[in-house]
Each structure stands twice: as C-alpha cells, then as structure tokens.
Amino acid sequence: MKSMEDMIKAAQAAAETIQKQMNDTQAKLDGLEVEGVSGGGLVKIRCSAKGRVIGVAIDESLLAPSEKAIVEDLIAAAYNDARAKADQVAGEELAKAQQGLGLPPGFKLPF
Image 1: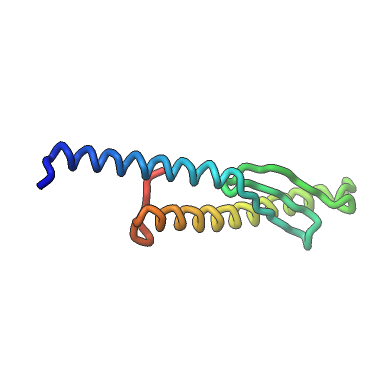
Image 2 (image 1 turned 45 degrees about the vertical axis):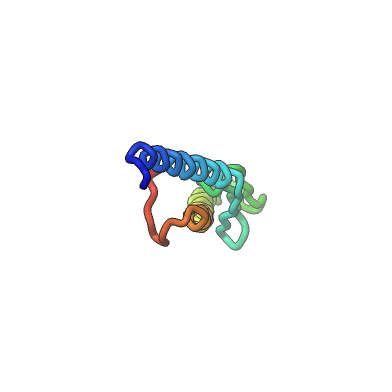
C-alpha cells in the first residue's frame, strides 16, 4: 500500500504535467492563425487563436473619406469574426489537450 507521502508526490507530479501541457497548448494557440472577414472580403483581420491581432487588410476601394464610417464598421465586424474563429480553434485545441491528459469532456481547467 502506498504511503500518504507517495500519493502526495504522485499528485504533485501529475499537477506539474498538466500545467506543462496547458502552457504548451497556450503557446501553440498563439502560433495558430485565423482570419476574420467582412464586407465580402473588403476587410480582413488575421489573429492568433489567443486573439492577438497579427494584421489588417483593407481593400483600396474603401479608402475614400466618404467611406470612413463603413470602414470602421467593417473593421469591427472582421475583428469579431476573427475572434469567434479564434475562440473556436482555442476550444478545439484545449479539448485535444484535455483528452491527452485523460480528463473528462467539459472538465474546466483554471486559466
């Protein structure tokens, strides 16, 4: 029979393994890119799966001063599209990480 000390050491080792794998997953998320699009492709925003904006592309046809309000709305819409895609990718990657740890589906790990 294992001693209490052995069980505590095993629990600490498991916690360290989980923390390392979650840190690895977070780093991976920052390397995965998604693209949000609005206005039928007139505005595009590239983000990491963690939501960091990597780049913005605006079609030249929108650069007239009279289009300012439309451009602002399209940028916001493209960012929201990218953010939704980033959340989806992040959720998928975290689910993969949890499966690798043997955790039940839907188990919430603190971040």
